[in-house]
Structures are given as structure tokens and as C-alpha cells.
Length: 276
Length: 337
Image (cartoon, each protein chain N blue to C red):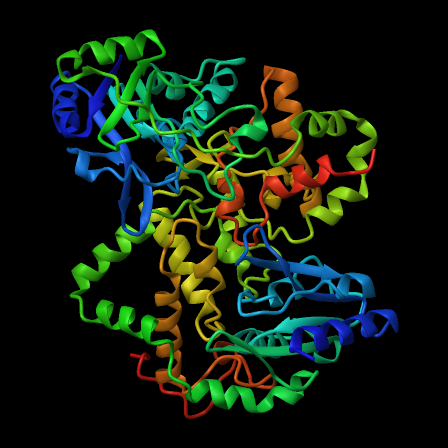
């Protein structure tokens, strides 16, 4: 039995027994190679879930939307390694109680779906170390190196061109599991801290605010980058912020579910070079 | 015999229009994105795209537009109304769905108040559309009773020649006739045939959709909750839509000086209907999604006699969660009756 069939069967039985109230998985999308989030509430619906190499979305976004877990009931969810990393961050930030989540873990390797054994977050404790030491995707690294090689003026021009495309649709924010704030700073309008206008300055403000708010909290799942309808390479911002945090604090976000959020905690031996 | 414009005359055509005082805009691919922008020659244009990612609407109703500048000093209060630009523009290579979008929005911007920012641009623009020869899985013009060669909203319609050497040329408005007149020496008579228009199979039954939406019993239907559960509430569908037109007025600056701006807004955002009291009449994504569909296929039609959708499919094509209106309208079409 393939992993898809195995997970369908188990998801169906979790729903029939009432163990979970919902299974968040994937279903067929608009085109042959698109997969979309599918929400199964009955065994029959669970039998239709899809799991293949096109299931790339990070579904943890739905765990923190609309008070889904506020009734204390359990939810099962299909997660690949970067999404498990996101779940670790959500747990460490007290947004999700680990006992409420049943994980159907999978990895996509060389176009094949592989099972990641385990059903609770504790079963994936080794994953963090593995991810931490893995090399980032070469394409992102190469793009980042190209940027690093630019002069500050060239780099500024690059981001000006990219951010000038931003239409402030906030798809990056909405697709991101870490953007769970009930009211985002850009939606606070009394006073209006951040300009809602999507002129170049307003677009810089938004994208820089977001980059800072995600420093040390990003699982590099790429949801924002894929969501952006105007193709701003948000992956490069996240990559750089992740690198900064790693270098400054030797911290890798989402390595485990019991790590302390790096910018919300301190160690006595933290570098203080920024204090004049 | 029909009049044709050969591709090798396009640069001369652009130069002639520029000489006559027009800027020429066309789909371009810049900084990893396709949108309408100014071009100097045919080679700058990305005419092979099924559709640019951004709509032509952006060029008539920009994402942010300054309206008034104000300055308050001890002596006086000064304000300056920022007038819309009156530059003459030719839009070349517009797809029929985008051109239709402009025509769909005209009654809205001229309804209880004539929006100069829209109409000054409309009056100074000539829309040269190119009929589609290709469609993708998301195109749905035929579902909203338009077609890949619909002339709605266009001033000139070009139909690509089967031999790919150029386009058959047809003026569909007085403005289009005048524009073609200015380049008549560059056009020639030919019997070359036009490439076939692609088949775009209807994806939903718009009559059934309108009927279901018009039944007030369905307003509180569980259908809205079920269909919208995947929606993450971003504004991507709104801002890529050739007909969405909602905006917000924002003052940028401080008590003494600043700019009042008209910024795009989206009914997908919770903040869109948030009251000062904190009460939000559309407090769930399902109610916001319902609003989007109702506005397009019920309220707008009631008011202006046309649906607020030209079938471009961008809402689905570029949706981060593979949603968009097509799926909802298909589901409504297939509801048991």
C-alpha cells in the first residue's frame, strides 16, 4: 500500500472514531499539477485526499486561522519537513498545543513522496537537527550570493525594482503560518503606523516590517514567495534574515518545539556588540 | 481583402503614434513580472503572453493616486487638487478580456459622480486589442458571454494572421478609426487569413449562477462557509482583477501637511468593513467571499446591467491557494435544484 492510501485509511479511521474533528490534507487542484488544501470532516472525504509530489503547500497556516483549535479538539494534518518546522515554531510561541495535532509526515525526495514516520511532534525531534545541518537549496543560495556580491547601491536598486511591483495584497502575510497576529501592524489605523499606499516607500515599509517580524521565526517554507502574485523574491529576504539570526545567536528557528523564541528570550552570553 | 498590419511595420507604427503625441504602452516583461508599461519598439513588447500578470486597469485606476496636497501654516491653509494626467496613450496588445473590463467599469466610475481620474485617462487612451489565439485552463471569457475576440471596450481589434506575419486590422470605434487613419500608409490590403480563435469551453452557467444568487434564501446558505474555507483572505484576486474597483481614501502626513490618496482596497480584507466601534458586519471570511461573488454577479448587474467579470481568470490563475471565483461559480452551477 502506498503512502497516500495508508494515510487516507488512517485519516478516515481517525475521523470515524472521533479522535480528530478534521483532517487537513490535499486534494486535486484546477490543473493537473496543482494541489490545494482539502478539509476532510468525514471518513468518506478522507478517502479522497491526495498525497503526491505536487503537495508543496505549508498547511500549518490553517491551524492558526479562525480559532480552529480553540475548542481543544484534535486536528490531523499533512506536513512536510519545512511545515513541521513551522509547527515547532507555532508550538514554541504557544500558538498551538502539541497534543491537539496529529501529524501525517511526508517528504518529497527526487520527485517521490516518502513517509516520515511518527504521528506527534515529539516523534520528529531528530528532524530539526537534520534540517539545520542540511544545505539550503542551491538555487536560493546562488541567488543570494549574487545579491551579496552587489554594491549597496546596486542592491538597493534591485529591491526598489522588486518592491515597486508590490500591490499590498498581503498574500505573503496571509499565506504565512507565522503571520497569525489578530491585527497586523499595517491594519492598525488609529493611528496609521504603516502607510497603506503601495507607492515605493509604502512598499518598502511593509516588506521591511514583515522581514523584521519574521527574523528568527521563519521556517523557509517558501509559502510567501509562492503566494506573491507579482513574483517578488521574498525567499531571498527570508534566507538573509535566517542567516543573520544563525550567525548572531546560533539559532535555527523551528529546530525543536521547546526552543525559546530567539528574539523573545536572552542568554547571559548573548553578544552585545550593538550596545554603544 | 482586409487591411493588415505587418509585424515589420510595427516599429514605424509606434514611431508615427509617438510623433502624433501618444505614448505607446504594451505588455512587457520586467523585473520578473508582466504588466503594461511604456515601450519604444515592437521588440519591447511581450505579445506572446496569454495575459500579462497585471491588468490594464492599473493604468486607469492606479493602486495609489494622490488627490489633494494640503499645507497648513500660521497664516493660511493651502490645498492643491492633483489633477489626473491628460497624456494621450495608445495601449497595444490588450487582450479582449482586459479591454472589456474597462467597459464594465465605465458605468461605475460615471455613476453618481463622474470620476475625472478615470475618465480623463479613458478619453485620452486608445485601446488596440489583439484577439487571442491561445487560452489556458483558467480562461473563462465564454462563461461570462464574452469571447477570445470580443470587441467590447476596444477601439481597434487586431486578429493575428495564420502565417504569424502580422494582424488583420479592424476599427471598432471612432477613436480607433482616427488612430488607424494616422498610420494608414503603413497598412496594406491582403487576403491573408486570420489564425483561428481558440475554443474556450464554458466553465459555468452564468444564468444559473445569477438565478441562485438572486434568491435571497441562499444568502445565509451553508454553501458560503463550505466553499470559502480554503480562502486565506488576501487581496490578490481583487488586485489582479480587471474590474474590481474598490478604494479607500487615506491622508498621509500630519496635521500640517500631507497628501490625500486614493488607494486600492479589497472586500477580502477584514478591515474593509470594520466599524470604528470594533463591530464588523463581515466578520468571517465566508461573508467576505460571499460579498465578492454577490457584488460581481448580482449587485453590479442590478445596478449597471452587466456582470463585473470579464473572464480573464487571473483570480484563479494567481491565487495562492488555488481558489478564485471559477470554482465557486461551477459549484453554484452544479448545486441540486
